[in-house]
Amino acid sequence: MTDVATAPSFPMPRECPMHPPAEYASLRADRPIAPVTMADGQRAWLVTKHEYARTLLADPRVSSNRSHPAFPIVVDSDREALADPDRPFNRTMLTQDPPTHTARRRAVITEFSVRRVQEMRPRIQQIVDECVDAMLADGGPLDLVQALSLPVPSLVICELLGVPYADRGSFQKDTKMVLNRNSTVEERFAASDRLNQYMDELVTAKEAAPGDDLLSRLIIKNRQAVTLDHLDLVGMASLLLLAGHETTANMISLGVVALLERPDELAELRTSPGLLPQAIEEMLRYFSIVDTATSRVALADIEIGGITIREGEALVIAVNAANWDDEVFAEPQRLDIHRSARHHVAFGFGVHQCLGQNLARLELEIVFETLFRRIPGLRLTVPAADLPYKDDAAIYGIHEVPVTW
Ligand code: HEM
Image (cartoon, rainbow, N blue to C red):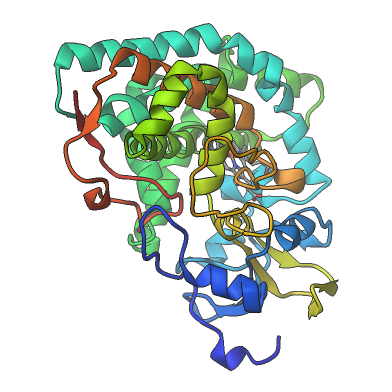
């Protein structure tokens, strides 16, 4: 890596809570693959151009293996723990390359197909209606995160996996801690240990007496052709629980605030609900909440954009930068519900592209349609600029959204 002495620090601050760091735009114009310095002093390449992000995410020479000593770490972490094969997270599809990745993903992929997810529609609608019933019964003002954004995806993923929803207090708290960039390394790993311990007990119980849920089906299928051991199953369960609720919850909160701030677009969506799927793609692009989970390490020399990324060099492929590439999305700072944003990379790209994207889309569609139809007078009780945005978290969002109607 050349002239790294001047490499700016990563992560970079946001000037506007609704926008990615402003520095991304100038970097993309001058140096779309630029050297940066990570929190632990490591040098990495920051990729800000849509074309290069997709090319690299689809390149088999680019690895997701977090136990690689050069894998970029956005916040201070424990490299030894990240390389420990006995930690369930290090065995998940998210952290593996093909062919191990392929086998792990294949074990659950049919559970997230468009058809299977559509079969969940009536139950998701019921869950959303019950949350809105409770909001109306409460009368407000209330925190939308606790009343709707968090309960909907949490209950959906709990029912799908066979996780008791009554246990949400602890797993939601531990998830928050795992993703919090301001907590200490010890706090983050302790929360991750608690999540794993909880899942270990749950998987053990299902191994003894399988029920009718995703984890039980996986356990039974695995008995016929063993591809996953007990720790792999625990890792799978923890990953699906974490990825399945925190992401969509943040998109619900950000999407509601964005639409409340744009009354004309909201009115249009009310009269033309057919526009909603397209508007959701645009919101996914605009917020790109999982911004740096798509980090990687190069396993070979790669020529791209006039530079050579050397074997063993770290890559931060920032999807919130790629999704604001003005050569691909004109006026990216405008949330335009008429835009066709389908080729965004908010769900990643390549073999690791989000497994739960069909489910996330359906939850978002049902939540936005139901909430704005049933509570037409919904409004924020504080200016959107004053909301507590999650600058401190690995997945972007809002901690609390006070609303009334
Ligand atoms: C709006 C909501 C969501 C967003 C923005 C999102 C975003 C992402 C992104 C960017 C990746 C790629 C990570 C990488 O390339 O390393 C990913 C992977 C993944 N997501 Fe999501 N996600 C969402 C919802 C969900 C849901 C509801 C689930 C349900 C279980 C889920 C499960 C997963 C899993 C298992 C992976 C790993 C896939 C693999 O490694 O092959 N996600 N997600």
